[in-house]
Amino acid sequence: MSTRRARLAFLVPWLATLACGAPRTPADAPVEVAANGSAPVGRVSLQPISARTAESVKLRWEAVPGGFARAVAVTSSLGRVVYSSDRGSLLFDVRTGKAAGELDACDDVVRGGTFFYAGKLLVVCRDAVEFHSVTELKQQDELQVNEAPITAAALTGSRLALAHRDGVIRVHDLASSKLIEVVVPGPPIDVKSLALDGATDRLAVAWVQGSIWWWKLSEPAVFHDLVRNENESDSIAFAPDGTLAEEGRQGFTTLWRFGASGAGDKRSEIQNGPWVKRFLFTRDSSWLVRGGSDGVDLAEVNGSRRLVLDTAGQVEDVAMDESGALIASADRAGRLMLFAPR
Image 1: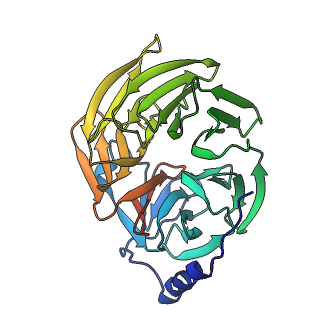
Image 2: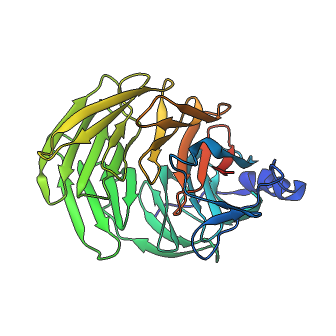
């Protein structure tokens, strides 16, 4: 279990934020979630971000909790955004952006290591995986994990993939408690990013030295070499249609498709800034959400359009809610932002 650091230095500026009132928020920003899963704003119902709604995505609110961001997560059903930094983990209200509490969570959160699953928040740290209630502000459980330090994590459906420093990627099925271990050939090398394909049993892994490999979880002993880049890939992600995005070639996002034979074929390349820390696909696989050195943008998968959402921050993580209608981003300057279609 990771130890909690002293939080006094963190709480002082955060409490000052509470005293000062609401963050900078557009007048029409309140977001509420209807029983059918849509998110109405006033009299306007937000639909999932897609080919039809992408151009209407705008900033809903911005808060400045401070610290160097490590991870962000958002849930529309529970109405909360989680912001984890080197100072701790804070909660914010989805509708207003106001501070809504602090979690007593492990203090060494892995980059991109916060996820919502089955009404609970998963916090992945270097030596622990915790389950928290964001309504009760308390830890409820802890996943038993290998003692080797964790370097990267990914959650798709009920499967949580954890890359450990002992050279093994362990995939936990949170619904069945089944564990699949993928032993990487050769000496242990730190994993930079992971991705799970929700439509198949494919696992993709990017290492710090630039290689990207993939496995079928039904054949964990058989690895497939996808590409070797000169630079490490900070982020990889699968789309619902099976497309894989990876940021390895300097200044470009590369998209791959897997044919019937399972071989990966390069589909296209999209320009980006010097680096990208997080990729996410919209639910219809038509747009790619990117957070990195150039802020936050939406890149069209089958076209040339690029929709800039923010250019002011160097973004460490982005997340989408379960409805696919909200995007949260967190950057190195301690800014937290929420975007949604108008």
